[in-house]
Length: 216
Image (cartoon, rainbow, N blue to C red; front, side, top):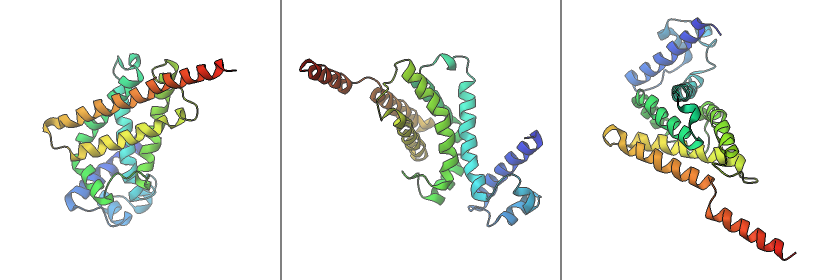
């Protein structure tokens, strides 16, 4: 993929955001948008299959930017899984802050961030899963979180729900500098990792298993 191609894709996304905010509505068609961009409709399809696909890819690219920014820190590789997720969530909100008005526009357009996965969130979710699964796998390896039969593969789903909660919380946050969102990130992720780690329930189950084995 050439640099020119990538730059054009970014230009189209930036223009889409600009037009949505200026007109308070999405472009009515690919034809109208391509005309505003000074390209043909055919050229547009070289980059995106539709305007919805363009919009969806914006959120995926912003998450990818957050991952790139967070992982570029020298200390990132030495972080625990909990610390890596905290860094990613904080950086995600930092990236979104530059586009808050557009994110609010999209939320109003789609009403909310629902539990089910609508088409416009799927590219973001796929990228999120791809980036977070290795962190969880590493955390299991270091015993930071517990490898639970039938449950470990679902851990990433829990963090995805946490991610949606934080994004929606931030959009509603009216505190100075979004201080409440920072607090929500810390409290929710600490709770998530505390639940994924060894808990009193695990200890009770192990003890119950021990007692059962003594009766054999």
